[in-house]
Image 1 (cartoon, protein in one colour):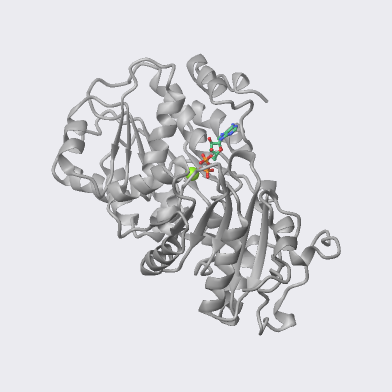
Image 2 (tube, rainbow, N blue to C red; image 1 turned 45 degrees about the vertical axis):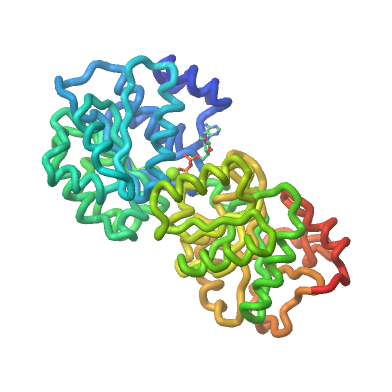
Length: 422
Ligand code: ADP
Ligand code: MG
């Protein structure tokens, strides 16, 4: 299938070609036609499958048509849970509307000074991308005109609920015209999401893409058992030293932990930096820019801060601490293997993590390969009954000591380091 056959505006097709996209992803192919028809949508698809374009393209297509009402307020509103994601959606809008005339996009998000955003809202706007908290502030100040809003989009709705944005989201929706079209995107459509959808959507089409992407076949996933914190540090150091050019995101459980680990790595000679919610927006932007430029090679991050990071050169994700919520595991590993690349995700697990690990494996529907670095084996590996049987193809003999790397050189490095000291 081609983008042309979706009957998108030619200026969009041109921008997609310029972006190097040859065909719609499954979620785009399924969502764009009903979205163009005007249906409300509730859509779930795994991370990294192109959901942004699945809503930005129909939104822009619509904006190329004359507005139904006169006015200055935004015609399209996108709500996102985090500032990073808001900026990323804005960048996607800018990318896809490159060949359209007079498209005005604005972003309203927390952690940034108010005056500039206030001025932005006073201007005439086509697309507004916002995080709920800050937008509510402006609504309360009477600064937002939704009288001509045609399309409301909730991106990562599940995460917005997790972050406690349900009331702000409902309040914002209530300020928009009842005639609007609404599209909700989420990793899952169960429970509270379904409830929210019932409140905000009208006769929605439900689109669910499980697809092979859910299996993350382009990401080699491994568990490395660890004895304790100091073992984790030694192992991390070893793993980071193995990687030549690759960029790595290391996840920690807490903001404080991220700071400490980034400091330690930095002083150990790594181009490391932390990214978490206690940093102000300009610090976060700066760190992300340095990650994109390659100046930061090891980013130590927390879950929320790393959501939506889309940097194609990230070859490895390391779960220094396992995520507390199984779903976050999928979001974390989805930071690698972007845009068709391959990646490696290594999770450190101690005997305290048995239950969490099981939950993760249940959530992703398969066992993660147990693997150990020669010379860095845990003294007390978890009881063998804790290690689920591998499903699918068995690795070739010896692969337990480092399966063929998705990218980067674990295997050859293994050989070099075999028998090496800690
Ligand atoms: P999601 O929101 O589902 O996690 P994104 O919208 O962030 O995924 O897209 C993931 C990556 O895929 C981005 O780098 C994006 O530019 C790229 N992408 C999106 N659609 C296509 C396409 N049709 N062809 C190739 N790459 C695409
Ligand atoms: Mg997304």
